[in-house]
Length: 205
Image 1 (cartoon, rainbow, N blue to C red):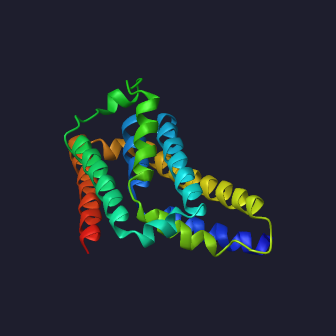
Image 2: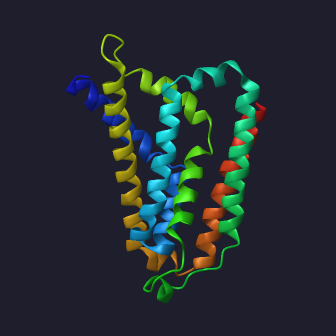
């Protein structure tokens, strides 16, 4: 892969990472509730999920899902159920006061990691996107594995950086976000529920 092609890929990946989605919303919510340091676990979970998706897409499952729409529909419903579960969990979560955020919040890193991981896996259509998107930057005349490693590592680093920035910003302005903590939780929960509804509608289209 030439440096010029990598630059085009990096810019495209940056644009993709900046599009609001379940993982960036989690980074925002967790950054405000738990602080950016704890939210790194959430981000690592999301990046791990994206690693699985990219690997599976590059191995050709995206093409299989395209050929078998019933499998795609089933995965979409599973993803929608998980997003809905996250939405309800956030919507009814108790608010965290500003004083609490200055002390250690009792949340297990593995729980944050798990939420980020499954949020990344919640949309099977990402498989199709990665299949089409990443294929544009693969040169069939060059060795596949080195290109795969460069593309995967670059994308995950960019995704991590964007989510980390979101978490840092949320941590910085948590005084504003948590001034009405209950409302903030309900807004985040509502967005997740809307994402779940959109996933269901798309599966029925």
